[in-house]
Image 1: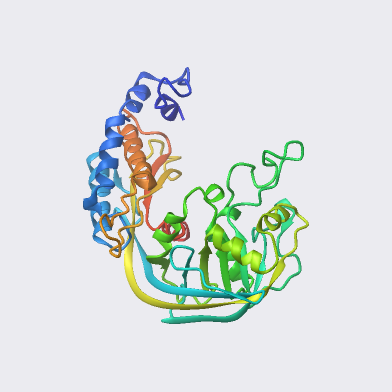
Image 2: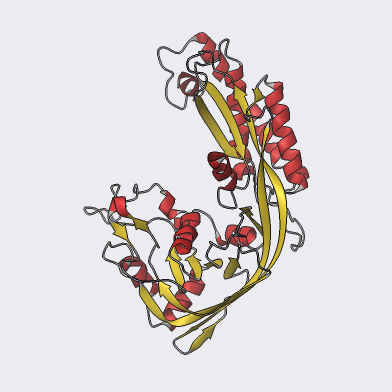
Length: 393
């Protein structure tokens, strides 16, 4: 903690009165120039956007190992190596959807208004004439007394969901979010797209559609289309991901408004209704048909793990973990001109951060009592896969 406070500088919290000169000197090893040098390298065109299973991954993993080695750290994987192999399967899906609602046929264009993937091992995945149901935010959160599904059976249906957590207004000030519900302005796991598809799979839905909105999502549609329109990954599964919802998809806000209007519903009114705990699923009175074709490949990606052993024999088997994901979106060869998603902010910055924090810890004259682990994980952009694999293995 003292090291972290000392590193904050004049603009941040003041260092603890107990901060020693040695801790302050170590913290001062974290510099603007050091951070920027790593960011510039990792986000350079040479690293090709750092997608898993590419030359960009090979360069990134080699760079991280080189940096950690140069700081005098030791390999952090229990087998004595710097890397944990993460078996991934890549899916490149070409998908289309047709909604038939209120006597109209709507076919949002890929990738400008619709993207969809299937993580099933089959080359062809179809969902035909599946009833469309709006399930609000698609959240079951018993600790908040929240259930968007109530007693409605969504097996075999296409469920449409809003992004992020339920935006429950503050009871005394509707312009703010209620801090007692889903942590207010913070995002809980219920707000992540990974959860949305997980609950859809658990409840037996045939397809899941998330309505994208830039504000609640925290990123624009180009991030969705750039990521989901290319190769997507999952951890290799013995059942070929047969337990996943067949189609995981997104539509733009404009496409959602058109879909709801065709059903005779006002999107904004439905969104407002979904912020109340008494919300119940609403059938759109129509069907969805999805067609998806997969190209599939298996690859071995890597988490990079470095360790600073603790100085206290009684505590060194306990670890403090500093983590960031090293991956980004790679490149899109279908684009004209610049094809590389360089990912300077997402997440060369975080990766640079853990290298520089490691530099500061390594500069201490004596290591902390507990061991420090520096963990750079793969495939965060694909659904926190590297972190999930590390936690489970």
